[in-house]
Length: 248
Length: 256
View 1: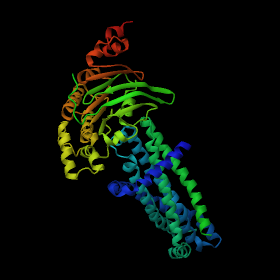
View 2: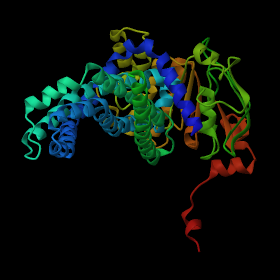
View 3: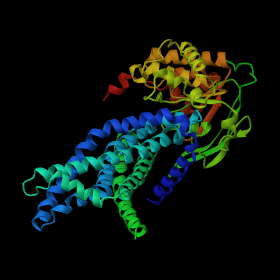
View 4: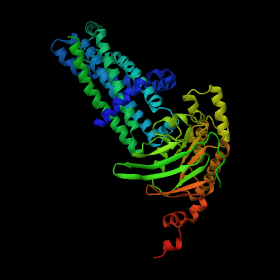
């Protein structure tokens, strides 16, 4: 485990060092961005509407019963942008994109494509890892920025049409505007940026150390997804604690 | 078959007492040999004898536990040789990048290192594909081609580097006998055309005896003998004789 952590830190450092070459790899970055956005956008919409909706469904009746229906907009607004959108989108991207990265790089490793790159003096970090890291670091925060208002809309929709809640759109968004500040949205978007780096580096590293044929590729994919999700949740706690400390 | 006259760009490869272990398993047990400039040097032996690992050391993909690999006297792991001498390797699997077209694969070295303009790269790619008999296939995806064609694309990709040292890992494995002959002919043509030093790892006896200037017999991580194909045939070592004369005789196999 410690060897893996060390390798991941070294790979991350090598990726940072290769950033000056990013412009040369712009076509690959755009390809990856398209891949991530195209694959994930619809899923992000569906997931966000239902996360917002279920949040309203769980909390709305309880709050309304106690005469607190007016705070529902703010509560869902804050939950979505500070916590649920970044974490849930990161988990979605770990499952869809992290797994694809580990599988693609892993199969390139197993079928000697990475060895072929090395013999041509092409650094796999510049060629494979750096474009993927840039793409995921841009794509995940963008998807989260998209997910937050969609989640709000889902919450507002359920609040307005569920008979036990019955909080009107205007009232919902008025309270949301009063409570949610720009820094709260930034908070969530920054979290998602950190999660993106974690997913990217873990998945690429897992791909690069793949051994042993198709079974090895399968193992790498599973490890990449599981390790990414565990790290997302650990980082979420650390970042939340950090923001609470900073905003005191 | 004699080695071609020394070309100024040909290189010498010297392997001295090379040792390598993976975990507890010692794969190379003190391997030594010298490859003369411009010759085809075949490393032949059974599967699992350490041939491919040896080749990976020469190209710098593995680091030895002990011993030296010198190219024109430059040690390989110290990267001096990698940047100073042009090497290309054709892997056992074609190792083509499936996300790229055939043309992009062949021109990858030039495009990634920005050595030529896109127009020049296209012309070079067309020329190299023509040289391996695959003219006009630039826009095809690698997985649309047969195994033999993919291997020839891999050779074209290696040719683009204009290597001084050419390394082939099991070039005829997974190929039908006709395609194996074609690949053998390609290696001979390359020798005459580029004058590059070639090291070929194989367990294909027909290929080895038809193309080699020198053959190194390897078994269990040790070199048994180095010599010309005729000298190898005349060797009395029972392990060598067993390998080069191994035949399936149905009557013996089926007898109770």
